[in-house]
Length: 122
Image (cartoon, rainbow, N blue to C red; front, side):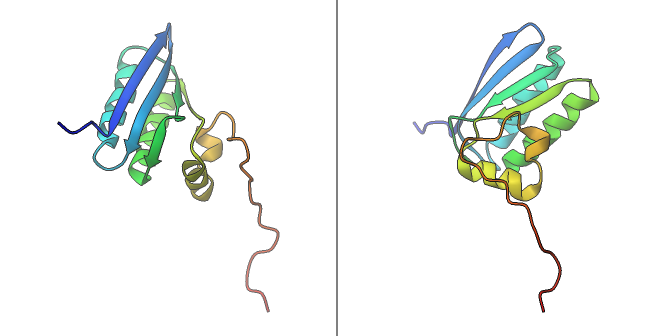
């Protein structure tokens, strides 16, 4: 029997939840993550922390799930924050400009690149 590629754990404390996905987040598994996050909101959770330390892969489907959940959480007056992303996911967040929106604390060792020149070099 094949192992599930993603398992989502949840620990609640009043109106706050810690979500810990374990495994890979992609087109196939992102709906499970999205359903877990939506269930938090239906249960009255207004602060969602997502510990990504055990996520081994995340593509744009996972990023979209995080962004949709952040939008839904904000709409009800709550917050959603990502913690401990792997370097490739942290890089994807930086490239897409979503790291400041989604991350509570940047990962250790990450470097934020700031353009000093733009336009055509002649």
